Image (tube, rainbow, N blue to C red):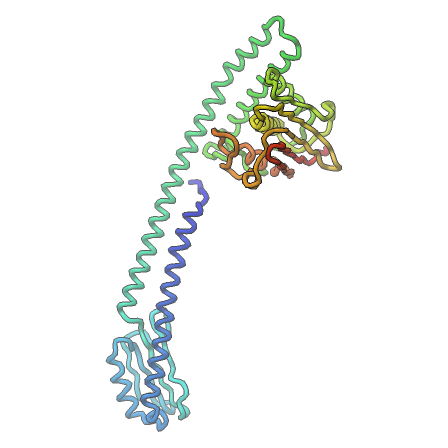
Length: 385
């Protein structure tokens, strides 16, 4: 059985039950301690003359009479190593339910009196009920947790089954598309190359999905968003990779007069960075799509892709002149599940990009001004063979 993370509500519930129980038991224990010392102090005041005179006969009589009290468990008294009272109803030491108190400040030396008080039965029953309630609450909690794990694992299995089916079924139409592309007449070489590249990239995405689902047949994280550090990272030529993607994007938006994609880097650069080719292309593609979605109705959105290398790092920036992002939303970008500006957004795009790049020991930064545009910077660590 795979474990799933506790939610904040579950952690708060479990902590609340635990700390409530500890607080109540601690309060009851403190009450017993204070009441026991007050009772001993009162006995000392009422029998100060007998204690001063070491009148063991009177003290024994009064102490034995004290045993009739429900709150007294044991009484022990000795003078000059001679025991003059030793009465008990049960356990006579100190514990959670008992408090053993020695009478202090006796003027006569060698006179010792110990009185053990027990927690009142009403409080004992209350403590037992509280303990039982805690146990039942914790059992109920772990029952819910077990059900949650079962449901989660079932959902993961279904998702993997769906991923396998999609990855398998997509191969046939892709093969047909490749054949159709090869037979197209009158298609210019650049368009043919772009279509072949798109087909190859879709095929690679399907293969990656299938491979990841087979590697871990119940893990959603590895099917959709592979855990940081677990990816087979190697050196990729970033300029070539991004140039190939931008050819697709330019073709996709060639009839969109409100979008102008500008390339500001050397496409022949051979600098390699740490990463995975298919993941980098998917991240950059999603970021360009975000920029296109941020276009204003009345202005052309200039999307500029730049690349600069500094020492052991390479920065890839995607900048646009679109609507921009408010500060309150900008602070939340990168959190899983948070989406801005998209009605059908699932909040995974920026989260996935940030997680992937950080797993390659890089990082992602976002700067934005409302009505001015957005600049996303991807920082990669250069790959040195």
